[in-house]
Image (cartoon, rainbow, N blue to C red):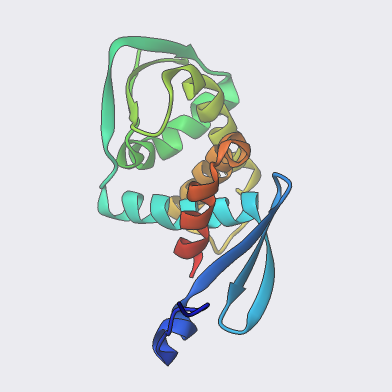
Length: 173
């Protein structure tokens, strides 16, 4: 049996091969004739950014309705930021209803978000969104996509299984 599969030039040019995982932080991969060391968190953030940006632009996020809505009390700063980006959050799959001065009911979440992570994730997203407010050239929907990607990546990059890492690397290219 041959040691290597015969591949056409186009297959070899587009192929990404994950060679090794270095701890929980880096991936060694080969793309075309280049050897790359890829930061898993940064790669995940980039893949999520593209995905979230598409969802926001196309209002294509899916929502998993909650049987028992969670009530979250936000700080004044988070509440102001939340009002600014509420429509984009809805496009990502968040279903939030205002209850009072700074309280919201979380009626639904994107399918990939656990109800246990909702409060921390939303607060993290809003903090990322505010901290990126100095970037003049970035549209609000781009800031929100970047903020949500950073918040999700910071919580999930350590939990990625080996097959999920391979899929993520393929999505980069």
